[in-house]
Length: 247
Image (tube, rainbow, N blue to C red; front, side, top):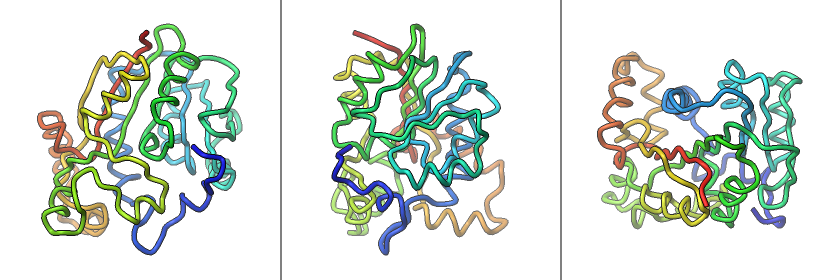
């Protein structure tokens, strides 16, 4: 992250693209947690990029020792309205912040694509913040999601890993696929233990938001999309790496 960036502005909706959709909060967060569950370690947890605390709330039942790092003071202020006082918030940039200890679980969801130096931040996770035996949970939007590939065929996006003007306004710097995400994890010295996709997705987020307000989509259908994503990780809404500290 650059100290010349306005993180408060990046997290707000713009005319071309919302920052976050109900689909993210109501569907993707649930299935991210389901993907993480088999690998979580007992002990402490650090969430990098907590935004307004929506995903943080899903971590609360699992960890008595939970800390968050967030660059936006405005986001932290809103998060504190819904997050208990025993959760520690650290305001600052990942590139420069000093944290008081190492953590057994580190979570970075839909944040890496915003960073100016993603490998540098991943290297800090690997060498400074992961406790011995700790695990790192990394999730990014997928360049090859069917919804995105359809947008390319429609002429709305130039190519799968393009950064659209709306995404750029929200601070996106890269659009990852599984191979490029694993490339950056390896460049940071992390050891990739598990790789997967989260939720098969052929519709855009705004389309999902409309469907979720109808009776067309059932919980069983959502579970089916999640299960299908395990078979076809490269066709998921998000891609997921679980890493441990490496060289």
